[in-house]
Length: 477
Image (cartoon, rainbow, N blue to C red; front, side):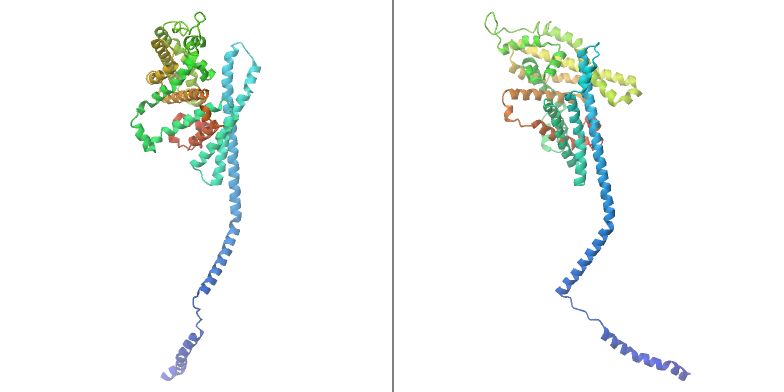
């Protein structure tokens, strides 16, 4: 058995054992040569890697180029559609502004035509007036250019942030050039005051020094104080120098105050002009308030006018003010609860009429008491006294008005007061040193940039609703 086993397996085993050292020697002989790492070899390796990377990048670009081209074409299509929406927004704003201006012109002209006049030619002439078209074009370009600029900036900068809205607001402000030159300063001043109101009401949140100043001021009555200060130059101009006021605004004040230009001029301004008495060739004597300024005594006239005709005159002014927003913006509320809604409008109208009637009575009593006390008409004394008394007299009349509307009245009279002061500076030759060409457009652009880039929390609800109604819901976000 051992012989058989050795015959079968023994020779091969010996051969295999003999082959192992020989295979190890061959493996050692065939082992590859490892080249040592040198700077030259490393540089050659890096070149191969860069070449391979370029080939991979070229291949990936070739593969993704069609999808990128498709994405770019889709983006360009979206941008073009947004520019189309901007154009539509501009056209819509033009129609609204043109319609409002034309409706106002027709309403005012209808009073002049009378009840029996059917002059369609005059109506068509008013609708096609260049002033009405210019105003509509100004508002339309204001809205359209804002949206178009915002779309372009979003495409170029790749982001949508307050900076885009600030730049778009500034660019849209250039549309003021389309409006009538006589109206540009008023619009610019009004928007500038609005911008200050938006910014200053929230300045204390980000500026510590503003909070320090507010700590020493009666901020709870700031609106009434500013209202009184703004009225001092207006009263001065109405009583002694109406040329500082726009003619339409001066006539409105006379109507609301139940005054006449002739009676006011004869009573208050003759001595100021240096008018001489033809009999004595001396300066005309002091003229009492009665009967030219008013027929009854000062106290009797004020009492009767306050409780009777004054409220009626003011009610005619304020009824459209409270009724038009209801019809235009809250008509659903009028349809669902007509009695309660109309009762609220009637109460608000009565409250506003009480304010305006009280205001004009206090102003007349202020003028009468000042001139009767001094027995002379001193415009500067009346102005300085007006500043002091306006803080307590006309400012107090503002408490009759709804607190939500007091700021609006303060801003309106603030704009008018600044108009009077600017006209006075122009007459004195001071304005030429601070006046810049197209300064009204510059301030309008600055104001629009600040307003359109402000957060919604800085706006009052009514003003925010108006802006979103004109510019769209995405304008202030």
